[in-house]
Amino acid sequence: MDNGLKSSAQRIQNILHEQKLGIKVIEFKETTRTSQEAANAIGCEVGQIAKTLIFKGRSTGKPICII
Image (tube, rainbow, N blue to C red; front, side):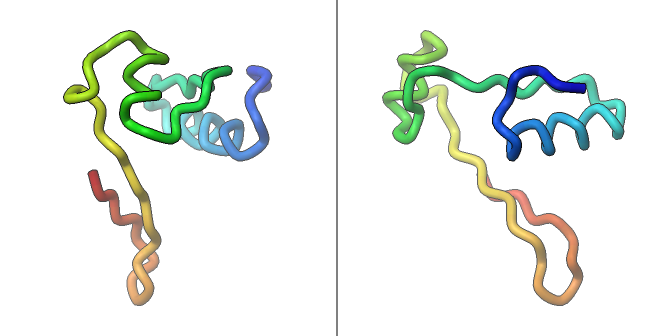
């Protein structure tokens, strides 16, 4: 499965597909480093943007999602 994504994004897309989650990874040509840039890229208000970070628990190895 190759959607023209960068390798890191493609790895995530493959995992989502393997888990049958039906979620599509989308990469933007524009930079989306800030909330305002992300809002501009998708056409919404900055208050509708949330930053998501995922860490791997040191002792459990389980994913931890922080929004």
